[in-house]
Length: 573
Image 1: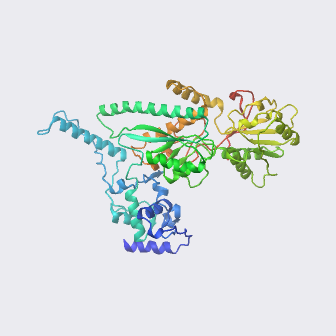
Image 2 (image 1 turned 90 degrees about the vertical axis):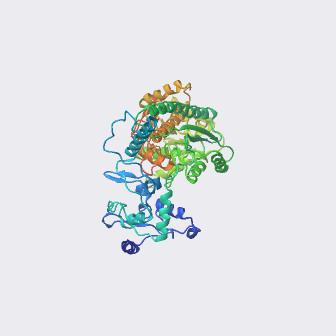
Image 3 (image 1 turned 180 degrees about the vertical axis):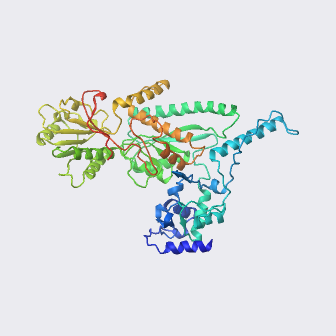
């Protein structure tokens, strides 16, 4: 083995590549921390990139060579076509394996054996059936247990614990002994324990609500989440009785869900400490939904730091990051709207000068910045920014309409700022088109809807109203069944989506209470079933964290949402 390892070292050592900067105290870091960085990021103890030899001598480096790229962060593996990437969690590599599935199951024992009581025989039968089912669930092909030496041989030489050469897709690595030991230590700990927030009979969840949230929206969110948890717990009791009554028991533990409400207060720079206090008092397995109009960044940072999944928070200002793992957003919020609108206007042409009106902070400013970046160079005259201060009266809108004839107006403003804006769409106005954000506007049809020329348009990252109606009605029936009055449709639908998707992936999670596996299962499952959603298309792939990826542009007409008419196809910027 040492000779092969030396050959791999020699090959990889001749390959140039960038070095990552050394983290402070790297040399004295805990072996688990070193192993985690090798496994997840492909970074060696000295800060150099991990390198491996892939099929046909292809050199992989850094994140491409990291174990998590194929075996996933949880260690539970994946599949790509005919290639099965086996689980390499601590229990699957080093722990006890379930008994292999027998070719046939012996007929039921109707009389006890000599010297064995009926109760003992029944118990032995139940254990055998449970073991068989567990083995089948885990996969019929079992493998012997690894130890430190056999793991090193697999990593360095590509020889598995049975002495067989592994598939060519498994890279061969050249690791120094200390790095190999750190990686092995991390593999032993990988998904070896259930994640915090899970007890023998309970799974704890929380939802986070930012200060300043509309009390009616807060209540709409909590009504749905609390009713869902109650509904699920009641149905679980039926499943327990069914499982206990069956001849083949599933070996599952049916845990009750408990929902905690984490209300935040004060300035955003204090939210992190508040969240830490909450999770210290009561660890939770994941955050479900959540609500707020402010930047989600402090909560996002908390989720990443504590490696705590946050499933579909309802925010117009999500964090846009390529290195996000633990927060899964419904969409990119106002940034998505801005990008879709910029693309639409470029394609449409004949728009005249473009003026965007916005506030200096919050979602309004985020949308304007995203629109400016999406517009980019080579798209004609850059948009003109208009950032008003104070309240916007009728005089402001009249002046805007008079001094900007044939202009296209993009209003990144909430509904309260549009009072008095009728001058823009009044008869005789020369404004070419007016675009509004559906995320920022609770009622985009306000006074502007009186425009009889179809100039008022809405960036609409939801399904078309008529197509969405059947799904909405299904949730309405569920709400009525649970004594909930339909109120804020968007908040209620999104809360229901977050709860049902979480329940779905946990039901198919093999009783594996791993936060990372929860998110990986969500990547796999979302979009393969019919989700009750206000969005027409939902999907996630490995590493993707924004489920809905497009938007319509709608013409606003009348006071009823059914009179929204699409003027574009589904735009995916």
